[in-house]
Image (cartoon, rainbow, N blue to C red):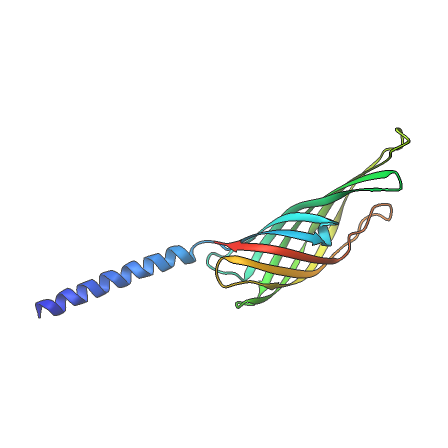
Length: 173
């Protein structure tokens, strides 16, 4: 009888410990850091993505980043800085997910002809952003990829981003 009570006491204390460990692990929010090519970044960018619901890889969240590029074409030097911010929703609880997002992209654009010092053109604009992506991610921490379409529309005088985006991602809790 005494040994049965000791075994029951150990069982209940271990199950409580296991539940507290599982709760602490599931209480963390899933986060991603990724490098993006093309899309809302024009050329390349770095983004941070996080789910709002602790312990879930799906559901509502947000993404914010910074990107752009520098190019010299026909003696014209151009610098573009892009800042996309979006609220998104991940559908799918397994490795394959659909990501749908809406947000805004801000662009700073500077262009100057190298031989003409007074030819500098600067402009700034913001535009709505709509994105639809496929995400293949592991159930836990690790590397994965994301590809999709990101639509944004700026003034006709500014460069338009190519809608296809490819991201190389590291996910963690």
